Image (cartoon, rainbow, N blue to C red; front, side):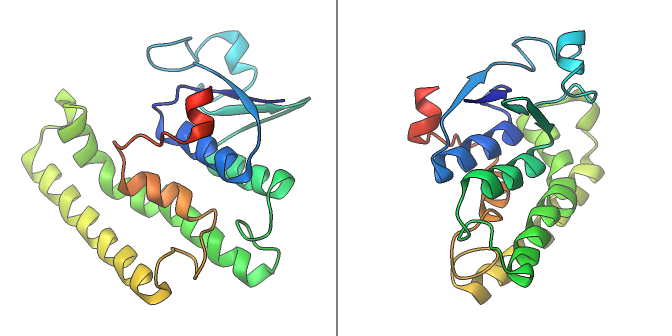
Length: 183
């Protein structure tokens, strides 16, 4: 059975949980990370030298990095609708997954740390304003894409790309999928 290491409140763990729910992959989850088992211990560092969640273990195979994990799950357990076989269609999904990890995430991190986490080191009003402008710019890009496709990020059907982007847009909203609630 698939083993997922990471706390369910982590956006990156939630990507994996959502993918498992979409693909109907059974799993066991263990709480690791902030507020739970520490990730800077030798046991965890042997699995992920970055000391970050999530990590999966699928038999004797270990993988870290949430976007790599959801791609792996779709390839191993999913169907082509989530992660197309056609190279061009897959590239379209990949570009939006990568956009989420780089551009979109960078744009919301300062406002999120300032407004949601109340981080003392993220209280510069000019940096906050600049972050909000960047977030709005990226939301306009996403809006135009959704208008062009009619509903989904990478085309006219739900795909793997919708998972990370959906979670970034609804950063504080819980997933609460049936599979997540069981674990």
